[in-house]
Image (cartoon, rainbow, N blue to C red; front, side):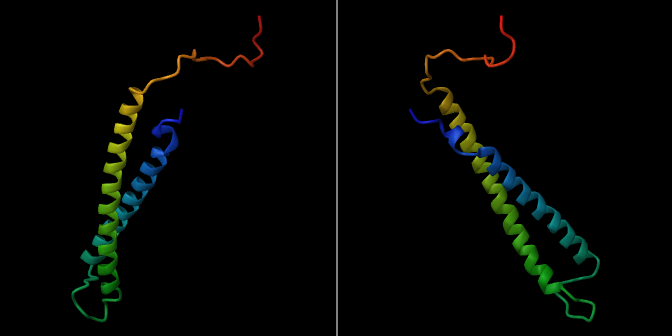
Length: 108
C-alpha cells in the first residue's frame, strides 16, 4: 500500500517558502512606497530621480510576487486540508501502534 499524500508531499516546506516570498515582497513593497513618498517619483524626470523607473518596475514585480505567493499559500493550504481529511478516512493497518521504543535501557 502506498504512503498517504501528506507523507509524500512536504506541505509545510511549501507553505514556508510561499510565506517567506510573500513576506519579503511585502517588505520590499513597503520600502518602495517609502522611497517613492520621500521624493523618488517614477513619473517625473529630474536630477534627483535616480531610480524612478527601477522602483516602478520593481514595484510591479513585488506585487506580482505577492499575488502569486498568496495564491500559492491559499491553494497549498486547501490541498493540504483536503489531503489530510481524505487520508484520515482511508483504511489503516490493523497492526498495533508502538507508543514507546523498546530499545531503551529500561528492561524489567
